[in-house]
Structures are given as structure tokens and as C-alpha cells.
Length: 354
Image (tube, rainbow, N blue to C red; front, side, top):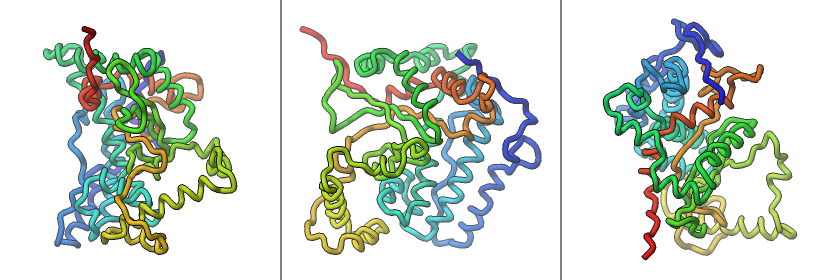
């Protein structure tokens, strides 16, 4: 196992350091306050979420205070600042990040809004599943809570055993997938809630999936899941439809998209306006299905960020075989709050044999 190598305080990356040259979160949000004053009719709600981590400490055994400042404080301030600039005066001004992600995923004209909202949401999800300083400190008084957060609960362990073989196998899968991603993105542990048959004693089906860049794992945003690494797969390969003959599969998918867009055209949202213009000839009106053809409903449980700004400050490039992304992933596994993951999963308990 690699041991994280935390950099000295004086280091900097890309002009971002710990001295006067670094832009603080308050100064990064300055344009936001100016925008809010310029548009007094509404209060912008996209602000920094409350973090469970102490910025003076960072994430113990994973990110230093300086690494945490870059990965969380500065990055989130930048994403939310730009998002607020994009949505000022629109319906998205008063909607939460997840709803913005789902509503803008299918509209190319709203790609910038999607990217900033999804990136902020994914980053928040990543940090919420990490142990804070008080839980990571073995010398704290609340040893019972600490042990529960570090140990994988029995129901979650049973589901992992059933779907992956063991927690160690799941750890290796996470590490292999993250190391194989040439571009930045996220690796997700998800629970399939519909579309897949039951798996395991409790009937819970767990899967790993990847989203590149700001891609989203939510079923309603699968149009922007971005599960293909375009650094290793060409455009022709990515566009190929297995089993398609003379474009039949592509045509069927396009027709399904048109029908769903027409069903949404009754509202005045940007999605409906863009969809209506693209589906003027559609005659079928029904209930909008947020899933793509063959899509599976999933619930995200755990998220690993492979973006360089998260790990590069503390772990370096790893060019000499020491540190780098591989070391970060190893340290991340030991920093996961497994009790939080289990609570979110709401797994079924195995039935007792009579």
C-alpha cells in the first residue's frame, strides 16, 4: 500500500499556493455578491454547502489542509460562482443542483449550466462520504461511533459479498477502474433500484459505473452520463450500436427521444422549449420517462473523484512510481465513512431461514 506524501505548505500548483497569491473563497465569491445586488428581485440559493470537514485540518490521512482548500473550498466556490452567473434570472435560480442536472442533461444549449451544476453536485457527494477529523482520530472519546463509521456494516458487507465477492475485491475494482481512467471523472458505487434482477441474499444489486468529466450517474441525466473514455475510444466506436442493422437501433432510439421530448413540451422550461422545436412532427403524447432506452434506475451510494485538482496537490504525479493517483485511491478507501454509505443504501436484510 502506498503511503500518502503530503506536500510542504509553501508548495503551489498552477499559481495556486498557500500565500497571498492564492485567491480566497471569499474573493472568488465576490462576483456572486455583486450579481445578487444587480438582480435584487431574487436571492441566489446556490451557495457553499455546509461541509463536515474542518478546513484547518482537511481530511485526515487523505488530504492536507492545503489540498482540501484546493479540492473543496476553491473548486466549489468557482463552480457555484459560475453557475449563479449562468442561471441568474432563470427558473434554475431557485432549483437544487440535482434537479438542474436532470433537467438540463438533454439540452445541448444548456451544457454549461449542466457542467457546473453536475460538477458541484458530484464534488459535494464525494466529500460527504468521507470521515471527518473527529471520526478519523483514534484518540477521540467517541470510540463507538468511530468504529461504526470505519467498519462496513453487516448488511452492506453482505451485499458487497454477494455482488463483488468481498470488500477487498470491491477495493481492487475501484483502484483498477480509477487507474485506468486516462481522463478525469468519477467512479460510483450504485444500487440498482429497477431494471436489473435481484442479486444476493437481500435482493440488492450493487454495481460500479464511471462518469467522465462532469457526467452524472442519475437515471434522469443518463444522456450526460459520459461513461465512455474518449481518450481511448474513437468517435466511430463510441457511436456504434451493437446489433444495429441499417441504423434501425439508432432510428428507434431517436424516435423514443422525440416522443419523450414531445411529452415534455407542455411546460415553459428551457428543456421543453428546446425539445418542442426538435420534435414538431411527433404526434404521440405520454408521460416523460427520464431514463434512456434500456436505462437502469440507480441510487448512488459512494463516489470517488479522479480529478487531478483533488489529489495532485498532496500526492504529486507519481512519475517516479511513488504517490500519484494510485496512492490517493488507496488512502481514499481507508477514509470512507461506511456507515454513511450504508444509511444511504437502505439495504434489505437477508431473510432468516425457518
